Image (tube, rainbow, N blue to C red; front, top):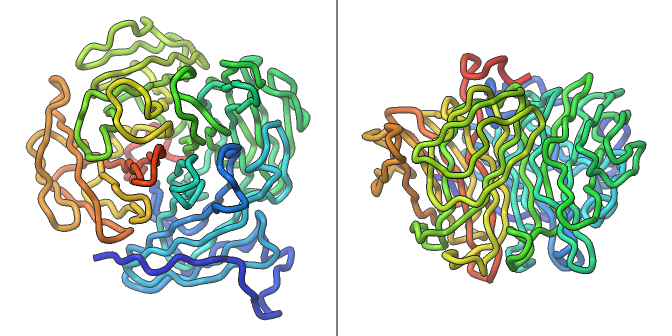
Length: 469
């Protein structure tokens, strides 16, 4: 059984021997660490304190939670970002650690397009871990979301962005894309639908920017209500990591309350044409008829769409870069003739049929990325939390050694879904006799806020069309 180990503050004194040097700021992962292929469990990560203009950053914090599913303790080194010297600590075997990191104000407080040199946190470990970025750590901030961090091994060179549109009630809250270079001398090309707020060498439709390792390119939408970066194509000559985010969104644009959004985006090579799309339910984990928004972005011209049960109003096809969003009221199976990018957006707490939570962004897990064993993080500080599972109907699945029940069929797909309440620890283990997928949603009791993120991504080399790049 996993146990929460401790909440750390990185603002401590280090011995002179540990003061950062240029080499330490981007230390290579130690050779003792062997990543799991095509998985979110890895040895080297980047984290970014993405824009959150609603939270009071003087009183709440940014941070990263790490879960060590292995049998030996793992040493962690965090550099870059807002650190003046490395943050170094251990994650004991079978435990999780949450480390508090300084905000990087040029990113977290920004509503403009900018290049921030060394703005990303670089995380290296001596043994494979899974990692979760929390913005903000404290649910009391009233503006929260989380991203499952993809390791550098999963970085790609081509992405289609999925972002919520700008909200402009007086001050303006843009949607954004964050790009982090994992190598020196990386050239990033941006092609957008005319919605970029110009800056950092980009015009409204994009351009080319040069990044070094750990640099962040923050692409903000124009500030006009509804300005949308979705469909933007990001390409690079070396692998990069990309997020979709929002400084403060209402979902939909006319429904309270606003919240920060963020989620790591898979590269095009990891997208698929088969997904189960699930609504998040409520704070009890039950299905109360809540609504949510789904956004589809085409990758290949002429992509055909099929849903089970049928979802009315969908276009007959999607073109490359075309974005289409709609409000959904049911779980459904999405199949497409070509891979598509998909974003899921939880509605504000005043939406009809939704009794708790607030806007959050997540992504569905491709059906072929199902796994028979998943170690995942659900911090107890965010309780109540639930795991949301999809599996072939009749599969025997357990979470923390307890058999999962309450399955409901998804159309005629041959798959079913259910929710499991999580408690007691930050780290959890799920296993089954057939491959399944798992996401986490949290509705902290402090008020209108929520977190929503995939519990795992990736399974094996034979799953993807080209594999993670």
